[in-house]
Each structure stands twice: as structure tokens, then as C-alpha cells.
Length: 257
Length: 339
Ligand SMILES: Nc1ncnc2c1ncn2[C@@H]1O[C@H](COP(=O)(O)OP(=O)(O)OP(=O)(O)O)[C@@H](O)[C@H]1O
Ligand SMILES: [Mg+2]
Image (tube, rainbow over all chains, first blue to last red):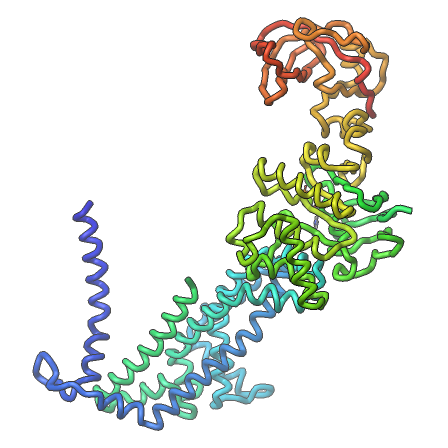
């Protein structure tokens, strides 16, 4: 018993260490002045970070990434929350249709769907190819399944018909009932899904590169374009980026408790 | 004039009718129990009165006002659900205050009424708890208070006690009845528990497949079942077919016959009440016996079918064992012919 326990812990920590190792070495590399033929770097410095965080192109890409993610999530929220409410309250029998629809974005690989998206968004009524809008409109479709699942789960936990009936009998309109009763109860699911969606949209590369590329540089595209500069510099970029996403994911997890 | 008048009420879902011609009146302050088997339309009737379901025909009058087409928000009718339907994101206080806030009352008035409501259902000290921090009984009391503070014209309760365990159920039903009488609140209480119906109500409406088959006081329904359905639904009646009754009791009848288990006695164990008129002795064999607290219930096999017999569980009487032959006599004054 003792032994097998120790073995299990050993395996888990081992895997953890293996996964953490590249990250640690990247972190170390980003802090190193020079790291050539020696086991440890020659010296430590924050220069790479200072250089990165004072590069206007980086700051712009960072800001644009945030803007696009926020735009996509705002659009997603505005569309999905009322939709889920309407489906769950008025057409509960259509839940399976929603479950199916919501899986579609997974069924098509990004490289393929980006071609389709380019087609749709090239002509009227949405001539937005090459503008940040196309990314917003694409990202929100990626985030939808996650948002739908998280919010639908919170909704499932509610006894929606009875709660709505009770609210109505107490004098609330459907709109008031939605605002005062339904929304506060799905808020946690919504926020968690927003944080999680944010962190993976933030790291999305394929669509960003194909649909917009350098015309509206996001963080990943910037990272990609910087791949030939100093390794210390890109390491600092990767670590900064990783920390940012880590913090977001951590907050999402905290909220989920 | 009656306080509530329901006339020719009809409701169907798609093409299936739930009920066609519901008619009844209720007086101010009356406690009505709607009793009936699962699926007979009790909840639907209640929801039609509340305005949660539309009706296809007929009218509902409360205090002379026709509310048939008013939205639920404006009927002044409150409802308590089996599922409690408390708002999970609100404390006890906020739940109870919800309806008052919707009415845009002054905050003093809201505070005062919430205070009263909490005291009425004895939830003092739980004001800041959330529903998930309360027991089932406490939750249902919050739901009750939330309805009561609205000072509704009618209080509807749809199986409010079904999710609770026996002891709390008994407690809460007494509390509901007390509050109802104190406030002189016109109340319709849905249940499929006959004990609940018999103990709480001024009148019972017995429903079966979309019809009110009998209405009356607990005593009337219990002693004078209108038909075979009522007899089989209430009080464990023995229901005999006409030919069985003719053979067993020597009755000249073309109808089914209902005999309450407590109106049969076992001649060797209990003395015959000389004021009543008893049937010929019927011989039977004990098939099983069951102790129900103050009552012992025997199932007896006779030549003309099975009979259920209830005896008071007096300490002087021993439990008769299985297979024993006994003589039974039926109190003919309490035998009812039913359609
Ligand atoms: N929304 C609905 N759509 C279609 N049919 C319904 C709907 N609600 C109820 N019914 C049907 O109407 C009939 C009566 O249902 P109702 O819920 O009123 O029964 P009930 O007497 O309250 O039963 P229970 O004791 O099980 O609560 C049932 O046959 C049910 O299937
Ligand atoms: Mg019901």
C-alpha cells in the first residue's frame, strides 16, 4: 500500500517535472545574459523583458489580441445567453438541436473552415476580410461551444420552469425574471467560460495568421514573426505570454470552486 | 355569492383534453383539498387558476371579478410548489421580499412585511441563509412566507409536502392549517395523500381523470363515497362486485358494494354493537396480519373473495396467526352501494 502510493506519487511528479522542464529552461533562458556552452547561464538579467515590454509593436499586438478576444467574447455572450434562455425556457425539446449545432465548429479543422470563413466574409453583407472584425466574428464561433456548455450546465442545475412560474406569480415580468433570477444564477458559469475562452482564444494562431496575418497583428502572429530574432527575446515573450494565460486560467479555476 | 367561482373550465394540451367541464365554488377563507391519483389533472387545474396555463373554455371569478384572461402577475394569487422554487441566488429575506419589491412598495413596508412573514413561519435567525443552507422543511416555509407576504386572494399549494419526510410533513401541515385559519385565507391544497386531505380540509374535491367526482367534507367523503372510484381511493374500502355482495351478505343489489375495513368485526374477538344491524356470520381464514400502530389489519379469505378487516389494537387482544379460521360479521348500517 505504502509502496504503491509512493510509486503513484513518483509517476505524477515525474510527469509534472518533465512537462515543467522546458518551461523552466525557457524561463531561465529568458533571464540569461548569454547561455552558450556552459550548463548554467553566464549571468542573469531582466534586459530581455525590458526590451520586450518597451517594444511598441509588441504592446500593440498585445493590446490588439486583448481587444479581439474581448470583442469576440462580448459578441458571444450577447448571442448565446439569450439563446440558451429561450431554448431552455420556451423550446426545451430543441436542446438536442443546440447540442448538435454547437459541436459543428469542432467537426471542421481550422485550416479548412478558415477558407470557408474567407469566402463568407469576403462579399456582402460582410466585406470584412483583412480587418480585425473577421477575427472577432471567427473567434466568437470558436468560443461558442465552450460558452454554451458552461452556461447550459448552470441552466440545467436550475429548475427553470418552476422558478419562472414563481417569479411571474410574484409579479415579475419575464424580462425581470430573467434579469433578477436567471442571470445571477448562471453568472458563475458564464464568467468561468469567459475566462477559459479568453485564455485559449488568446493563444489561437491558425485563424489569426490566415485570416488577418500582419494586417492586424495579434500576439501569436507577432511571436511567429519574431521567430528569427534572439532566442532570449522570444523566450521572454513566451514566458510573459504564458504567465498571462496562466493567471487567467487560475482565476477561472478559482471562480469555478 | 361565493368568493371563487369556476364555471365550465376546460383545458387540453394539443388534442388531449385534461379536463372538460370543471365547476365548483369556494367560500372566502375555505380550505379546499384537491385529492386524486397521479395524472388526473390537479396541477393543471391549479395552474389554470393561477394563470400559468391558459384555459380553452370557461371562466374563473374571484370576488366577483373575472380573472380568466388576466396574466398571472395581476391575479393576486400565490402558489407554493412541490420543488419550493426558491431563488437560489437570494437569501431568505430577499426571497420573501421579491414579490413586494416587484410591487414597488416602500422599503419600510417591505421590511415590516418580511419580518411578519418570517415570524409567521418561525424562521427567525435564518434571515441571511441561502436556500441551499436550509433543510427541506425550512425551504418550504420560506416559500410559504414568500407567498403569504403578498397577501394573496387565493393561496394555491401544489403538493407542498410531498418532498418532505413524514414527521416534518405532519408538523408543517398543522402549521399551514393554523396560519390559514388565522389569516382566513382562501386556500386550495393539492395532494394525493388521503390522510393529508382528511385531516386538513374544510372540503375535499376528489378528482379522477379530469373530473371532480365528489366534493364534500372529509366525513361525507369518507362515509358516503359517491362511486366505486372514491371508495377504492379513500380509506381502504373493501369493494365487492354485485354478485359477491349478494352471496356474502344476502343483499339484494345490482350495484357494487363498499365496506369499510373497520365496520367488519371478528365475532370471537369483539362484542357485537347491539345498536347496529349485523350480517350473518361469514367464515374466513386469516391470510395475513399487519400491525399499523393503533390498528391491526387482517386480510381474510372467504368463500366469496378477500376482505380487509381493521381491528383496534387493544392490549387485551392477541395477534391472530395466519391460517386461523374466524367468523366475521359486517355492520350492515355502514355498507354502501356504489355505482
Ligand atoms: N405541459 C404539458 N403538455 C402536455 N401534457 C401535459 C402537460 N402538463 C400536463 N400534461 C398532461 O395532463 C395530465 C394531467 O397532468 P397534471 O400534472 O395536472 O396531473 P396531476 O394530477 O397534477 O398529477 P400528479 O399527482 O402526478 O402531479 C397528464 O396526463 C399530463 O400528462
Ligand atoms: Mg401535479
